[in-house]
Image (cartoon, rainbow, N blue to C red; front, side, top):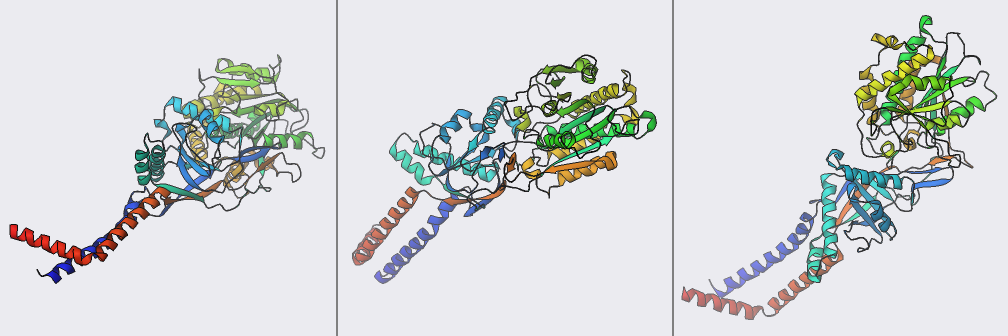
Length: 562
């Protein structure tokens, strides 16, 4: 090889090294990200609830997010979350920890919900529900979003954890190395509005209908039994797609009771001497606004010629009907005060016998948010009680939790059977009517299971159900009309424009885009490496003749030796 050929080879080798460096640096940076070769990744996100009730605001007031993502530090107070969106797994946080974080200038929160809650420990679920109970009564001046923990988001979270660990390394050298290799992300929501818009057209729709007694009319002298429940659910995430919750079993029991009693009332020979009014209300998780509207229409409206509630024997409210109680499976009969002897309420309590447990709790009139549905009727001096699987108020953590709770169809069927039997004893004034609800009049557990499956898979939060385009209220209305016919009515209310009792807000669901970015230290290192490379290249060009001569001499010497 001549000197000229050797020089040409050295130039070609340097040129290919330059091309390789230019191409490989961004490729290695992309492959180091959980997003792979993609510059960004989209995923659905669900904003934390926001509503106003009696002038008090609840939930998060912001929805726009355009912040750098950060992971939760293992040492509270050791990291700076200013203008950052904190990403954390739902089961890794406690109330005390989140309070410490919110005391800083954190810009937003993104909570990753586990894909399978069954693998979580009972202690972790209890801690998360404690966090839910606390958060449901608070107001947050920052955007809070929830998303399913997909493999991509899990990788993003792990990468952020690695970056957080880098900032907490024991030595500066280790922190520098870890910071260079860590990946960063910018989270941007599709929502562009600075403030969430109220939904003034959101409706609370309550459905009610009458099964007429043997007298053939609903006159003031005919006693009336009211059976009521609410079809909406509540929780931190209104738009979460699978949050029918325990209330799905209650609605299923309500509809099955309607079906069975309508069969009895369809035949004059089996029609009792009581009217029965079925009320399926909205806004149950918002101090029972739908029941309030129904009562105002029936009791406070002088334009109604024949009100349904003129002679109420007892109001039976249903709640948490398919939920297993902690100590036993007995239904709790919650009342505002113990029923008097000889009343229909006392007879209904006695009909449950050992299967029920009477719980008396006075109404706290100072609290505008009621604990139980029957309290809304008791305030109007109507004898009422709530049959519930919950030992405490309906704001029980399980009733409003994102943690799914399976409805026991066997238990739900047994309790529904006990319910219709007790109602039969009351309506017919006979303690031996169990044989009536057999055969075609027996509880259909397949029907219960179908309703539970359907209701558990659709969002039931009133913030979404208030949209006139939602299908669930219309579906329930069509189903109830099969048994109540022309007596089925609906009453709807929208927030008052001047002084609303309630108000919901938009932007419950959105799309978040995670853009892969590198920290500033990575850019600094790349710039230093490029400067060093260009400096060496400049020296090589400047001293090219000397370098080629030295390399040629070395190659000749090696050749002579070999």
